[in-house]
Image 1 (cartoon, protein in one colour):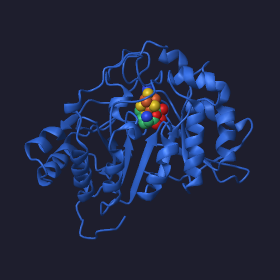
Image 2 (cartoon, helix red, strand yellow; image 1 turned 90 degrees about the vertical axis):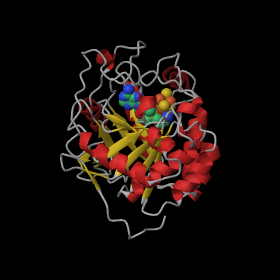
Image 3 (cartoon, rainbow, N blue to C red; image 1 turned 135 degrees about the vertical axis):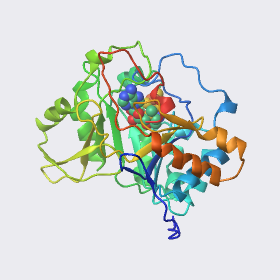
Length: 337
Ligand code: SAM
Ligand code: SF4
């Protein structure tokens, strides 16, 4: 990825936060149905409502011309979108884009890892909540654990460094695997982030309040075996990081939207697969970029102007309360994690 020094504009919201990170949902569809993310029966967007790959590229380009230096592809499952290879190759060539990264469930990673590397992708986060095949199938409702592990090992083989696992821990479901997951990443010199479940979308498969496991509870389980040191490092994301006291190079992150609100230094926005620019994960404030790209096909300036305007409505923070009714009806696959 080359650097174009002509870009000087930056996006700043009303609270003085600079937005330089975009999460782009490549599709709302997925080959898994994780119990915390989706209902068993889902209705996905009709094809005409989903941005075309060209529209996605234009929107991504507009952001990079406005000072965004990091784009994370997510979904749904980004690697099941038809034509994703072409999108990846295009994004990999955007001047000003310093970091192209992805969050994936790993199901297609064995086949795609080499392409991701060739496109200049910097990091991949792989979601994995259990190392027991039966339980993995139960949590994802459809997933094959072996395929995901093969995908991870292929990504390591093609040279990805600092791969990261994302794990959502649910009480009485997979909380007995916290140490096994830590051992798994230590063996492979990967990082891991533990994510507190967020109340996005109405699910009836489990009671989110009863299943809630705080980051602090997870950390004390890890520390029973692997003492940790708090680290001041930050990536562009919401994780707070810790390191192993024994000098192992992996990092342990905690994404704690409940117990440690991360809004104060929020630098990111999201674009859904239908082109809705969401200004906050936990609020509905948004603008419709699809309407703009469809009204002015191939023109970048109207998209940039809409994005600039949107900065004025980025909310100061989100409020999540598991005991209350779900306020955000969109599922995480729509939002893009
Ligand atoms: N399909 C890809 C994957 O699973 O990595 C990318 C999209 S997924 C929506 C992104 C991340 O969101 C995953 O790490 C997943 O564990 C997390 N996630 C989904 N629903 C969640 C929820 N309700 N609360 C917290 N994290 C959630
Ligand atoms: Fe699919 Fe990712 Fe949601 Fe699981 S978390 S259902 S893999 S989008």
